[in-house]
Length: 161
Image (tube, rainbow, N blue to C red; front, top):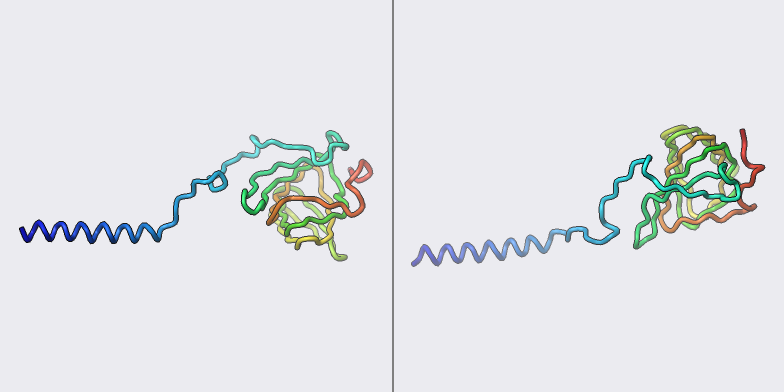
């Protein structure tokens, strides 16, 4: 009888211990925003950023938008070289060059970024860029993506050879 009581006490203590330990583990991610995402470049859906430029328009692909913060990860690719006129974003922005050498400028500085190069632009900082043909840029912003043009969006005159 004593052995049976000891087994029951052991089981009760074990169940309580496991229950308390489980309460400290994070819940598994089960919301739509907390699922893994896998995308290959060849499968991405691209949209024209500047439809007025037709086939010469840079293209954008939104990779992920956080449903709570609206933080955004995106890619921009160019078929033609283009000067992206002065603009700013409401959110902090970072650029990582995947392919091509870009020139970015702000506050009187011009810097060339080669593949693998990175920069960070604080929110509302006015900047501009010169992107070569066939470039690919990975961009993140820490809230919703927007573009606020200082002198209007690029036109045919901003396309370079």
